[in-house]
Length: 308
Image (cartoon, rainbow, N blue to C red; front, side):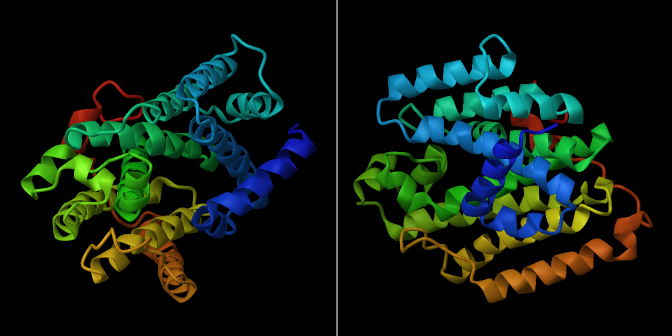
């Protein structure tokens, strides 16, 4: 049984920090929402361990300790102990949690991304791993659905990267691929110094959002494998997150002009459409499943849950 104090803390973290995900998760059954909150709180612990310590070496040691706690080689703190118990109960893959920690370790270095392949592997580690853990929480049983869950994580993280270009650059991090930036006449170091061409950055953001669209489309292929009672929540999260890219395009992909936020009326619009989509007959099994496009995972060979 989950510790009541840990569960209350997890709900609070989920409500305060997740925003879009918390809004969508309100459509989940209560017990599933609590498991999602616990997984989110663990993922937030990983992120905060990497991001909140100004000493990178100290953060590396802290992540190494967290890695050991998840593996069971160190005595886990209460949240990790509850996460491990939930993982056993839900058949949740701990290898995904360990990959998430590896992704957080990468953020401690000087972040420069060479190309799309490197970017996709990063997105897998910091986002698709969460999707794979959520598959266990949501009761997804078909292994064929997992590559589609990987793709939803990639699409959402690509959206994050496009939204947060300026904020990341201010922190010395450039996730937009260097080869795309070079073709647009942008030097990553100029982006960090605040001297990059806004038009050049917008060109790269536009191309990255197009890449995200391919992964959102592939993610849709796994939606009918979600149990009907949880499907509306995931479609809402997908559509509302994708709306960030829609708004960025309205701004001509100007990622340097301020953080793009989806206002509540638009969230309600996309959320209502998503619920209607989740309930339509085709989603309930009247249409064939989508075969996953293996070329989308060419850069992910060997990673758990990816299309082999």
